[in-house]
Image (cartoon, rainbow, N blue to C red; front, side):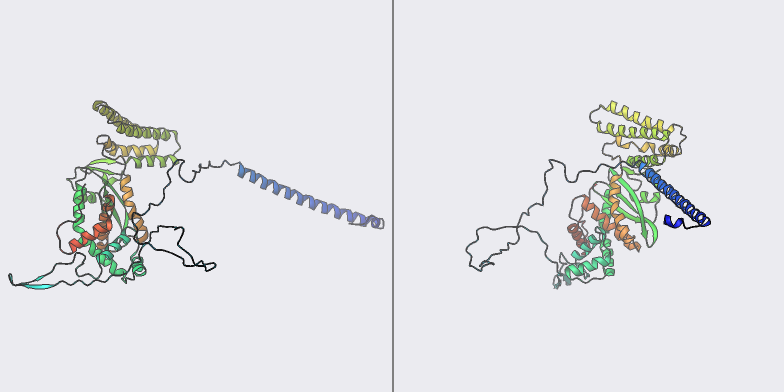
Length: 456
């Protein structure tokens, strides 16, 4: 600031120079102020646009816990006590005064596991000379003995369960045996041992395959696999009680025909994949797959033509399911007439002209599979979806994500055999460990009688 008294001492030229400098400073400040105002206005407008956008509606969060009135669930009390451990006192831990009999007992029931340990067994089979037939005779194998094997049946079956059910690699299985029981075994030794186990259990898988071929209905599905680094597939053929798996390098129709054979009289339930077309079987297509594809297309196709026909196909399928549930309440003639009406509606949907490309593609699919879409209306025991096959092939997907498939044809064969027997036993509610061990020991000791009985 320039003092006013000092200005009186300035000349005219100096005063003009001071005024010009002041004007220049005011112009710079005004320009800077304008730029700041514009910047603040732009940021405020940007913020308003951001908050002005409609937010996606939040999904209503479910209340945690069970619903009101739900009966609480706690761990059931064991039906027996193996050991009772008493904790008593002779003197007070505070003042060391002697104590009399206890006035109360606090009880707690606790379940625990016994640390595992290796049990080494030596099997001695005595040989004798028979005076009658003049031959050397040998005592039979012990029921728990694995002929010419260094690992017992319990180790082998538990390794199979850890490998194929819990999806552990051989290295971790070997580490687990070492840490939990002190058993030393190499990953390669486990791999070869399980391959031999599957060879001896192969006869049981053949019986399972025969039961699958005689089933009234079979769900089929396949998923990608790696066999020695090359693209392959795991095929699943299952029903409510049986599960048959096979690793194959082909994804063609010949795999289905080789497994089920042309003599299969049941209903084949599958998705709309082309290999299931033109097979000599009675078929049912998965309507869940169809609805799922319609729903996915609706997210990308907002046209009114597509929305209208999407509602039509949903209404048609829902009417078919409702008719199936009313089968016992309607007379035979009324039921058959409504089934014909359902199929006629599907035929009309299929033959209608469409401008929408998605509807044109789906109508071609109906033209190919429409006779196989409502088989469940003729036979109430037939499922209208293929969810069972997708659930039963899920363990292979988990296994694939951890092991990336098999390295050899023998490993692929072992995978198919052991997984087939394990999943079948689980479907039937049978103990996997006990049944596999007994079947393996019976066949390994030369027995010809089948241990596992499978019914369609």
